[in-house]
Length: 358
Image (cartoon, rainbow, N blue to C red; front, side, top):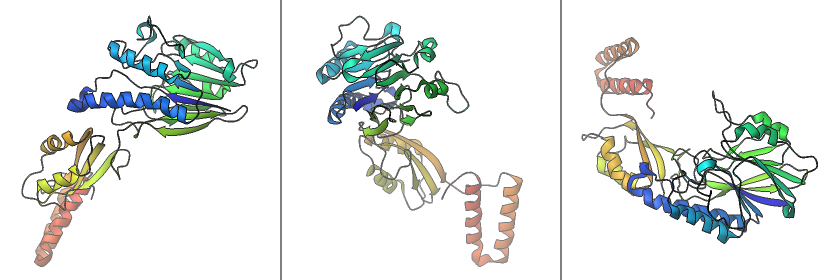
């Protein structure tokens, strides 16, 4: 049995300009996540760490980022294989022309590595060398008992094309294929070949799956690989958020300040959330989303507000809506005691017809 750690898309050196004043603190989270990859790999008994491209955010990262990566890898004393990605391409990769620690294998072209001490072969497929991938992605009948691949590229997305053909994975008959390029973990197993994107070990963009993590892969000869996700990153969705989105009913507030106070209580410096404001705003003061964001953003890592609430009485706009309002007017005139209820029902109907949620 062999255990390997699989990570990718670390993006060391990323500026995180969209995070504003929180950017520097998040760069430190990125460093901690990278260190955690190796401590978790050791804790899970991994004999090898695979980094499937985009270790760096660009070829022009500062020297301190390169030194940090090299020292972290060297200090781990674990065998590590790194390939270039589309953000840190082969020709200008920060590892080109520097002294590498003895435990680091930096592979900048499509190559088959034999690690005899592990009974393992690794087919390394860096970004930019796609023309050679298909021929290389084949099991060697006379090779090591365990054979895996390391690729930085994209699978076909919905309605689009990728740099990887899933049939290459299916027909390769390899034990495992470690993918890089997508920031959230995804299972792309094809036939008997287990294949995964590990995702980034920390939040790169807020729409990725959180908490970010790494994969631990267990390989046994002539058995399908077993894959487990290990949480690594510190960025988190708040409790109750589904895929980072949380519906928040504004109809129960009579002023802006209580709304702000309750939302702030939900936030931490690690919180990433898209708040969807729903219901009907009935307070006298207006609800300004820009002001809300300005007050809430300093209390979290990243926040987005979506307006799905009814801010004021809605006028009818379509023939159907005008007919609905006219029917309500007639009913209200016939039953004055229930007029306010009819008008409230009409407003709720218009709100729902336009995509609102209660």
